[in-house]
Image (cartoon, rainbow, N blue to C red; front, side, top):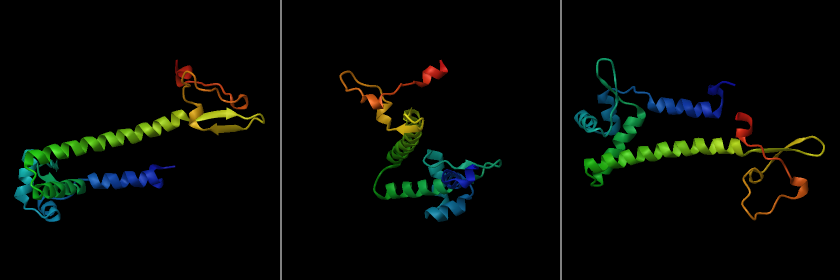
Length: 157
């Protein structure tokens, strides 16, 4: 199935659209409620750095406009520009870490699935707690639930 037909594909397309640099500086300034010179200053300071065309013109994405609004809100709350820069940097770091966590959780869920064969030969998926390492002193599963644990390294060397 193609990526565009799945829910994940739609989220990917929406994410892509938010990152697409399409707004010239005057339009981005209007959308953010700022003067274009303010956007140039923020670019020089590294607060919001838009994409550049081959002619070096600035092109802002929807996400850039959202950041501009965030800068404006923080400024109106009395945060100085260095403080704003640090806050934005930390927010980007949190976004990256949350993204990494989502990927790791999905990977962990895939690795922790445990399959067992029932007496009649049917394959069953067991709760992941059976696939985790037993701690010393923890009870063994009941005899009818006993299974063989196969680690990924058993297959990949």
